[in-house]
Length: 112
Image 1 (tube, rainbow, N blue to C red):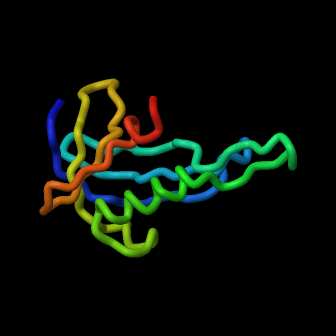
Image 2 (image 1 turned 90 degrees about the vertical axis):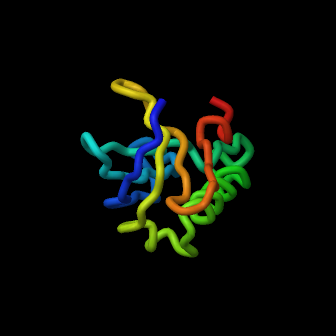
């Protein structure tokens, strides 16, 4: 594991091909670029037979904004962060504020 600086180049907040609400944060870092995220931020409700937002998903969005230090999703693009790079073939699941010791571990948060 190695801590690297990264720049957020773009983001996606919306529904993926199967209708699941999700997010992605695309970053550029030394040695390439990658996407971080892909976690479901909604859940299926059997009673209504539809998807609904989950409190945990909305909390994840809030924690990402707090960690990066912005108040709006649209302001993520262009922001600099730190990431915990798990090496070739590994996923980046942990992002950090560039200047403060503030981290958000998505894998731990979503329990994977």
